[in-house]
Length: 179
Image (cartoon, rainbow, N blue to C red):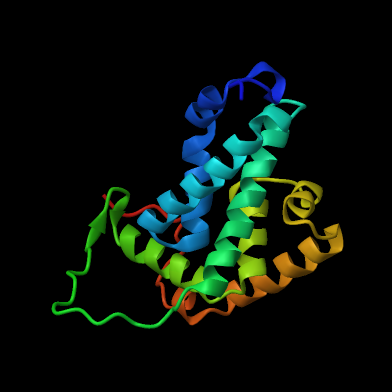
């Protein structure tokens, strides 16, 4: 198997250029750094196996990886036990983030609200708004109609607006913290 295909781009070059953005998508899907790394690795292995057959440049290759992320994430969710795991000690709660006091709390609350969405709604929001794909590109990645993307996004945004995890903040996340 040769290392070139997707319009002359090597797989290594593709991974070096796009892995950070793809990892962020995986993180938003899983809500866990380590699971996101595992998910991305599995999706990249699936892509590497088909790299010679991917034509048309980096965009189709990236769409293939995103599709592999979503389908693998869904497969994992269906197979894995999602019960609680007891621990001997409670972890310390983070108090500040690099974006200022409270930023960690806001990120945690957003992840909690995202976790309350269905898998399809979460995938649509990640692809549509975080990865900035168009409705049609999102539909193509997920293998659904454009109307399904629109309705899933609408329902997901409505659920986020009414999520208790996001309604308890004194100020919006876009507001600057006082110096």
